[in-house]
Amino acid sequence: MMLKKGIVLIMLGLIFSSCDLIYYGKIAVYENKYRSELERSAREGMKKDGPGAINNEKYTEGVKEAIQDVMKRPVNKRVEFGETILLIPENTRLNSKHGNVVDEKTGYGIAVIFYIEDYCTEVFYRKKIRNDKYILLFYNRRETELDTIAQKIIKANGFTNTCK
Image (cartoon, rainbow, N blue to C red):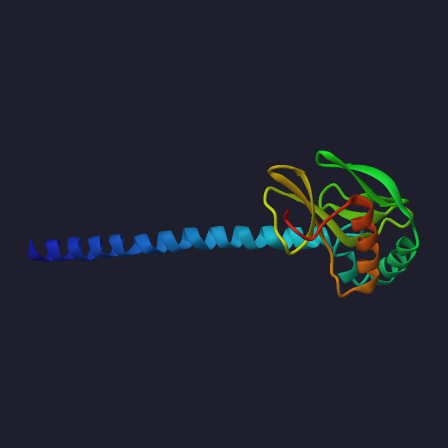
């Protein structure tokens, strides 16, 4: 009888201590799912028409040439983005997945990205659509070619660097 109670106590101890394993296993599954989603979005961004195409060895030279070509173009093409009309360089389009500018001649993505947000931030250039919506413009200011393209877009569309 005493042996039976001892075995039952040991079994109960094992059962209750294994609940932590279930909890941590659940966390591991969610973390793996999140990591795989991040990896998938990174791969998507490095496709030919994505904003990270320049980081893909297959497209680096082509993207650099496309950037040089787009720099010379006037900003006069009207495109609908969100609830407003934007002006972007001619012979380009906006990637519907990522919001970046894509050269129509070559199909290469350029890392000048439009993004809609419901708050104002003074980090990026922005344009107010309505009281609770802003279009943000992301680009790397240290890249002089991208800065040239972005500044043309900023001037043509009336983007500002303040939340007023």
